[in-house]
Amino acid sequence: MSLLRPICMAGLFSLCATGLFAQEGTAPTAGSVTAAQSEQRGAGGRLVFPVLVFDRARVLDQSEIGAALEAQVADARAALLAENEKIYADLETEEQEISDAKPTMDTATFQARAQAFDEKVTAVRQSQDEKALEIQKLYDDGLAEIEQQMNTVLAEIARDLGAVVVFERNQVYLMNGAIDISRIAIEKLDEQSSEAAASDQTREPEEGATAVPPAQE
Image (cartoon, rainbow, N blue to C red):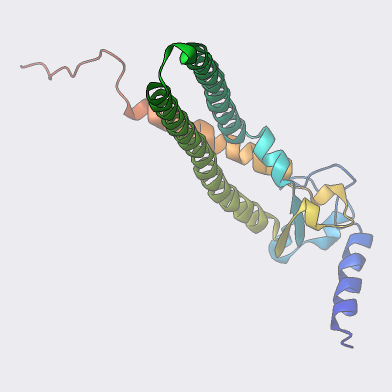
């Protein structure tokens, strides 16, 4: 059995034991330096955190872009649910009308109307299912975009703190809360969202505004 893994793990826990990480619950920042941490600097005196952790669910829930996506999808699902309830209530009413009119219709007429109703129900269900899939696609596409931005942010944080690996929190059995960079990731994502919104406002002309030609001298 190879001794490499025990030796590596022993080295990792040795780093933790020497005070490389801040106290529990204190996320690392470029300026958070304790006396113990000052002895664990990399080249050029830069504070180094070789192992970092982030909580993906927390970042998605608490970041502005993640919350916006959740709200958008929740509104779309609520609207579809309300629409479904109305549609199916109308179908139940129509079905009852057909059933009540059965004694007044001959067999052929009733069967034709019943078949037409069944086809209508099938078409409605297919249409509503397609709308549900569109909402799911909206969520999946939005989530993929957030994940891409999140990966960029995590890579930037890892680079700034000299990390060689970043774990998702549910992959870690035991950890010091000081290496959790979830809050930093949320702040950076929010900063990007604000910058993007400001950039969009700058590019888009105000409603009703028209271009004014330069004055002729």
